[in-house]
Length: 329
Ligand code: ACO
Image 1: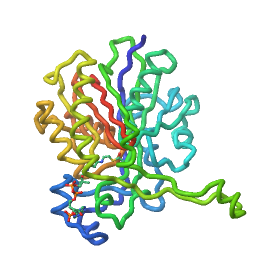
Image 2 (image 1 turned 120 degrees about the vertical axis):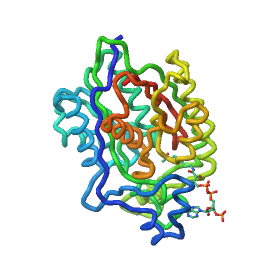
Image 3 (image 1 turned 135 degrees about the horizontal axis):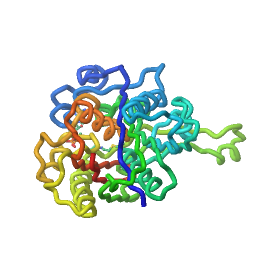
């Protein structure tokens, strides 16, 4: 079995910014409510000219530059997203944009747990000897699916992208441990459902094409909150145990950026100080599959995360899904 390590990280967010005060012009809310309940102050959203693929491209190019390898040296691209430009998948567009002509690319859809699950998937390809250099990208543009009249959801989400480059190594694997779960019974509390009549409409009404569209994001906020506070610390503890490590061995917590209160609760249960929690929530809001690599990139580039540090990553969200990996930087 080969080991793997992360050799590059990059991120990108759209330039258009919506502050809490901007949202207070759209819905009945205010900066004090949003800041105190969530920790979010601003979020970045795609404008009409931008695409998810272009965000993913810029994050990937930054990660490749840090890794010091060329795109045509990649043999696998995994794009974690729930909001690709093309419903058939976004990894192919990303492959073409960065010129990774020797890679195979496909999407992984697991909402806010997508990046962690894609990282685990990539590590399996490397450890099995199937792939040597892998690009793992988390990118989402949930602003496309938000109902901008619904104050309970529109304040939460932003768009963004983050990427890491992994390489096979003969050194010990830097993915030290993991734990992953899903519970489809919880799907009703957080979803973005297709609604339409499809083939039935053609048969019964003689319609020439299937009719329908995706609904806006539906979220039962308190149910998801309780699920997250219960499940996230547990999944991290399980991943640590799987790695043969203790809570005291963790240097950094880089978890899905959904709500400051959820991050504080997880840190408290793990006995971590607030300085050990990597957070960019106030600037970007919840960027779904992008949030963990976006936060990771910031903490690596500002020098906080150093070689040899142990990072506990944890994603959670729609599915419901929740997953953690312990990584040595
Ligand atoms: N501004 C002002 N008031 C608001 C707003 C707003 N933006 N939104 C809701 N309210 C009101 C409600 O109407 C309610 O009023 P009422 O008491 O008169 O009925 C009151 O504020 C309290 O609402 P709650 O929903 O109980 O507020 P809560 O404290 O639970 O915070 C929140 C809501 C922030 C959504 C929280 O539940 C949360 O963070 N949940 C978890 C979300 C999450 O982690 N999602 C992750 C996965 S995302 C993915 O996978 C795609």
